[in-house]
Picture (tube, helix red, strand yellow):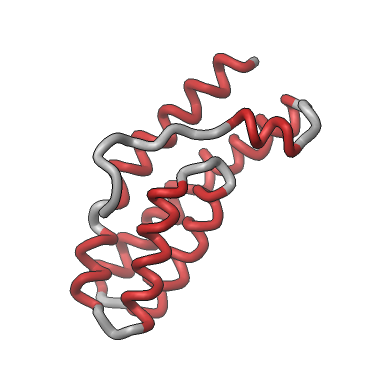
Length: 119
């Protein structure tokens, strides 16, 4: 697992990508805030059940989502889960998957706080 301090969302870059349109950016953030818990549940369920394909797939999906908001450390760890699964290092991948929830929860809370401050 990388980084000791939680990575903060980068809404400035996201807002620039949408030409300063706060409404569109807020919609994108709300989709992430709504969908990321089920993506996380899928990761945890796959790890709990030993579902290699499910863990690789769910990690890939969440990796893309957190990358959109600038969380490169969590995205890198989710990518590492994918690689570990492909290389057959199941136990290490399952262990890393169990560390995702607290980091994602912290990131989601900060994302929500930042969106509130922008609006």
